[in-house]
Image (cartoon, rainbow, N blue to C red; front, side, top):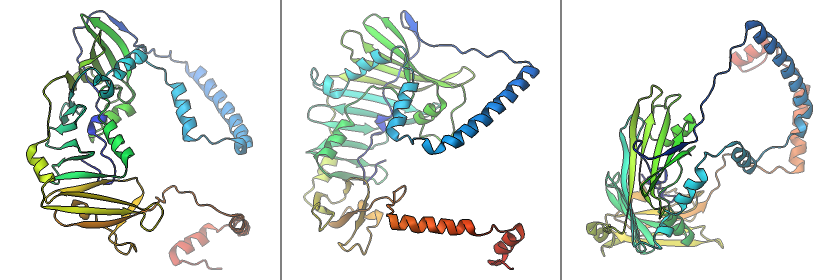
Length: 406
């Protein structure tokens, strides 16, 4: 469930809030239908193909002439283009104002605590996960139905991992890393991937936004935890219900509609304000804070001006989850002679001393080439260009014997 070298990204981050169809007052819809284009005659279609072929050939010539003048788009450019192409649904902006009113930082201005409960299922209606997330000024905590849990703990985070059957405590790189973890507990209600608020309805003191996801690639992102692909022409409908006066979130549910029109419940969520406080299990706290303990000492960038020493002590029977920036390799010694085995991160009895060195990932890394190297490369390219191409017979001989005769 957890990544030992990176900050835990809560499973809850995918989930937002969910909804139920049915029984809302007057409804205003922004859903647009689709129309089929009339069929063309065979002659007209053939003429169109000929015209398209001519145009395509002309475009290919123009493309070759201007190839060297094309500008490459960076990621920021692509994001701008993507934003320009996406048309917001009719009620997106208004729904987002409700989302913003339901962050933990906003709700705790008027309430002493928040309990957000959610269940998420796959496209067949089988449960993927369920959890309770509790937030107060003193505590942040998430508790999953499978027994996994995590909570803020004296400036860091601790928890229990059911796969290891072991308590753990985070070792954070810096205060910013702790803040990033705190922020994962701030949002409860937001749009799912590719989702838009197409309808809004009011009944009594409640307002409901009905949201849809129709793009298959976005549906795959929602159902990321299942092996089978979603059906073409299927979609998700979510209803998010809020208090009309306070904008506070009340409940939600989601339906997945198959292409044949049948639907399946894929989850629900609720929010309770100023309810009974959740607390970490006392037995778990006793294990973490046991005086019969062991210590992790992790030195990052040893011997450099960026050297940083992180330490953490937990009771025996508990382990450590270092949360440091990506790109570090870990060793048992300062000379990098022996790499740290991954199983060492599960050490629960002995003191552990490790050294971390920043090692950039070479995948996609650009290699700088000076002018002299570039000249050599160009010269090699010219020599290769002068060499005669192999005949089919010579190529076959090369493949069979590793040499070319003649």
